[in-house]
Image (cartoon, rainbow, N blue to C red):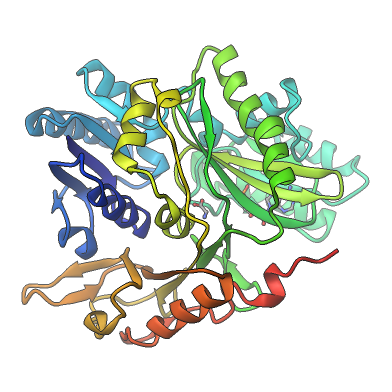
Length: 436
Ligand code: AMP
Ligand code: GLY
């Protein structure tokens, strides 16, 4: 099989690594990839435009990927990030008769419009954080004034994971509405806002492969969004992750499957937008059970770095079965091992940071530890240097979470670059203990 994989992060390096382990991949291309994917696949210099790129640039990008996939005679295009999905890459490829792993533009609305997601959850009785969406600032402010509690304010559209504001007072909530709807914070994405109840509890990311009918849950993971230990500082794309959360037992998995994942897939089918790809639910475990905070239309990052290493089945077979609507024919098996991933980032991220620093010690990492590159590139001398905010994820599999954690951090010590920052508390026992 010839596969073209879209994206440049550690998630895509993980997908590429996993694809290469199976027998089905004859050639793998990654657009644009990073220094990690360059070592196992062929990188193509086609960058994904920024979320707020003008429509003409997006269209040119979709055309270029479709053209490239045709030239390569790709059997399958697997899409990592959300933006190309939301712009309709899968639909564009379908016009060319090229199979793709990922939802259509209509199905990707589940992530690309939080208003759509909330409305769907409401209409199909999928447990979720209750709320409402608004295109009028006055109506949004009136709604907040009449609430008993301080709500969460979210931009409707894609905002690179930054579109959620969690105010402490109603005044802050009103200011958040102003910032989005009047001052253009998050651009077009914030012209419509979703205002929802603030939930509390543990968070978990759940995933399922689906071809629109068959739903195969993956293993769950927890991620760490804040930059500093103890969940301090600003939100990031994710600073680390582990799988499985020990408290996520079989009964909970069954509830999530029957009350959330399957109903969401059935709902999309009923809406005439069948959902194909990975369905990712960001859930809060409340006293009333798991509730959806958001749905995403792709693998999580850094969750992919700790879930895909646990996949025993051939990923290419699974992706192909999803694209061909034959997921029921495939057995998807997972390892019992635990996996912990620690993100090593450029100092200053998620704000300003410098790049171009040589990365040392990659050759000293233990043979069975996993290093998934994100913001890395090869310089003119062939040296791996930093090129982004999140630079790489060091991950480790082991029989227990504690051992996986020790092994991941032991290998983090081997890797060095100037102004490196990472969290020390990923998968720390205090956070995943089973609390009654
Ligand atoms: P989202 O991008 O919707 O997953 O939100 C990002 C983060 O904001 C989540 O991981 C939660 O920590 C937090 N969050 C989102 N929605 C809520 C909510 N309704 N109540 C409490 N926290 C929330
Ligand atoms: N881990 C968060 C995300 O992938 O959106």
